Each structure stands twice: as C-alpha cells, then as structure tokens.
Length: 510
Figure 1 (cartoon, rainbow, N blue to C red):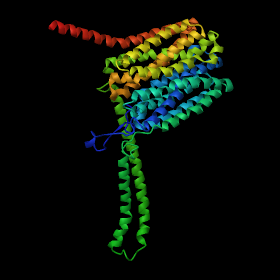
Figure 2: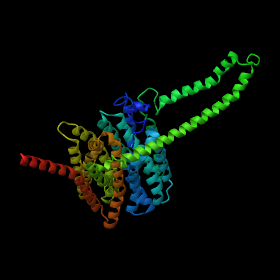
Figure 3: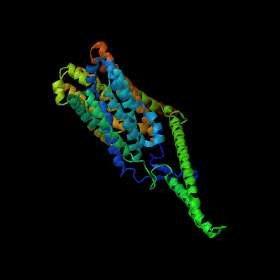
Figure 4: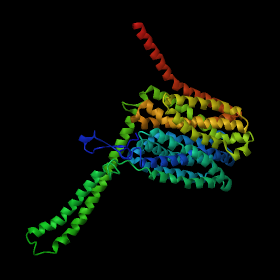
C-alpha cells in the first residue's frame, strides 16, 4: 500500500527481464536516514503533541460556546480520530505522489484548518475546520513520517521508530505550555491562528523526506530512462538541424546556389519540432501519472482485499480489536484532566506543573526504557507489550479514586510510562505479519486507534453529562480496555492448549 517506487529502499531494473535484480540503497541505516528520524521527530511534536494538548482549547471552547461536554469533546476527538482513520487511504497518495509531496500537502491543509478554526462561530463550525480539515492534514503528514523512517532503516528500525516517536512526549509538554501561554496572552482565537503558522513547519519536515535513490541521479522512477530519452530527443533535434545542413552542404541540387535558404527554412521546422516535443512530453507525463495512479490503487486494493489479505491472520485480527478498545483510554486523560483539576480545585498546583506534562515526560522515558528492556536477551517484545498494557489499564481504574494533586501525579506518571508501549507497536505488528506487510498492517492498526480516539472522549463526556462525575467514564473505558487485552490473550491461550493437546496425543501414541 505504501510502497512506491520513489520511497522503497530497493530498486527494480526497468527491463522486465531484470526485475529480480535488487540494488541496496547506501543511505539505509545511515547518512540521510538520521535526517528522516529528525523530520519524523518534529512531525510528532507538531501533530501528536498539539493534539494531546487540546484539553487546553477544550476548556476555552466550553466557556465560549456553552455547549455540552459531550458535544464539545467531538471537536478534539474528530481531529485525533481522522488523523489516524485516514491512514489506509493516505496510502493512495503515497503510492502516486510519494511521501514528500503527501507530507507537504498535509502540512498546508493542517495549517489551513487551524487558521480557519480561529474564526469559528459555533462548535459545529469547528467540526469541519478543525476536526475534518486539520485532522486530514495531520494524517497526510503523520503517516509519511512513520513510513519513511521504516524505509530508511532495517537493522535499527526499532531504535529509529522509538527515537522519532518520542516527539509525541516532547510535543505534549511543549504544546501544552505554548497553548496555555497563547490563550492567556492573546485569547484562544489568536492562539489557533498562531498555531496554524507554526504548523507550516510540517512542510519543511516533508521537504526533508527525500526519496531513496539507489543509483546516482535516480531521484524519481525511471530517472535514467528519462535522461536517456531526453538525450535521444536532443540528438533527434540535432539530427533535424545540424546534420540536415550537412546533408544540404554535402550535395543536394542547388545547395551551393542558395546558401541562405537552409537557415530560413530551419526556423519554422524547429518551431514545429519544439511544439511536437512539448506535446509528446505532456502526453508522456499524463500517461505516467495514469499508470502510477492505476498501479497505486491496484497495490492498495491487493494489500487489503487480495488473496494475501492481512485479515486472514487471526492473531492480527485480534490485535485490531485490541487497538479499537485501547487508544480511547489513553486519550481520555489528556482531554478531561484539565476539567478534573478544576473540579477538585487543584488549578494552582496544576499551573505550576501540569499533570499532562507529567504524562508527556514519563511517556518519553517509557518509550526508551521499554525499548531497551524489550531488546534484552530472554525477554520477548510481546511480554513487555502485555505488561505495559496491564499497568496502563490498572492506572485508568485507580485515577478516579485520587482527589489530591500528589495522587493524580503518581497515576499520571504510571500512565505516561506504561503508554510508552506505543513505540513497540510497529515491532509487534512486524512479528505478527512479517516485514513485507508491515506498512499495510500498521495503517490498519492506526486506523483502529483512530476509531477508538474518535469515540472515546465524547463517550466519556456524555457519561459525565448524565452522572455529573468522571469516575464512571474511566471505569467503563478501563473495562473496554480489558476487553481489548483479552483479545490479545485468546490466540496465545489457543496455542498453549493446542501444544498441550499435541504433546498428550504424542505421548498416548508412543
């Protein structure tokens, strides 16, 4: 789905007979690959960091529009959800336009969504400008950042993904402080306008996503062929010009009697030739775009609905169900913690050091430490992933019981650290489906996370409108998270039962 000729780390020869010949790109695992990590790091800061800090704006929207918490929470959840839900469909853009152009266009759309939202007259207006427009732009910039890091790294893919995704933690910490300062100094409308200008840096990050080029000068598919054909076309132009005059000089009837006629006749010929060359180039460009679009759609369709569909993998399907239930429990604290602080009269202490910043800082350390632990000998990534999930769901259950700043700070630290398992998600996905299907599978997983993020915060807001407490919101979301974890445990339990049954049958047979 995401594999385009300009992004992949290997190159096939243009001749169909030589399609089995692979050339390894010298930039993989080094050189410009670390610039990709830096670019992805800033994309995570600007996109995921700003979205995790939307709780600041959610409070401003409640005061401005006087709507219910459930309705207002739809703005933030729409933006978060659409950013992830569009993942599988952004693959069409990546296949046809490449990661660089897709990310640049996404940066422009995201910035436009922030700016237009500054002029919102109602919550329903924000649904379109911020929820849909800014969310779509975020998805177009976010997915290429994840995919390109995977393309540039093979041996150090887990380390590179872990380092780049730490931008989410840094971004949450920085964007929370930035939005709070901008809202206090200039108001939420001007704050969104300024944030729209800041989001234009996504275009710079997209420009750094240089396509992999195995051979020198092959920055786009068929680069050598284009230059060769261009050289041939130049020679053909010369053959119609210079060699033509040589033939006339060499001897045609009347060539010596009219020495000035050939240049005069060559000018309209050159003009007609130039027009025909331009027309051919336009036709060639249109045909290439058509071929790329058709191939991109064919690859996208085959990856999801073809004979080698990922949905035939039962463990991967269980992983999708986990993603549907899990992400909302991680997002809800970021959206509703500012209001919980106000309800418990902890605003002064929270202003000194916000609880969301504690989650963000521990989230960074969690990604690094959990990645190191998962690489230790004798420890599997799957076990670390499950333990982190259990710690996170336990923290979700305990959070409503804490009514002091110190207690909430401890729980937020546990939430931040255990949520560092997000850096292990690409590794777990690769273990389930293989490296050749990683891009398609990860697109499905983040789409499931997007659906979860889309429905979770409004659901918690509606429960508060009914019960006037956030306690039941966290309890119900914790239960849903437990359901997702149970899906992860079904397949391993089936494997253990089958192995024990086989051992019993073998023993009985002996």
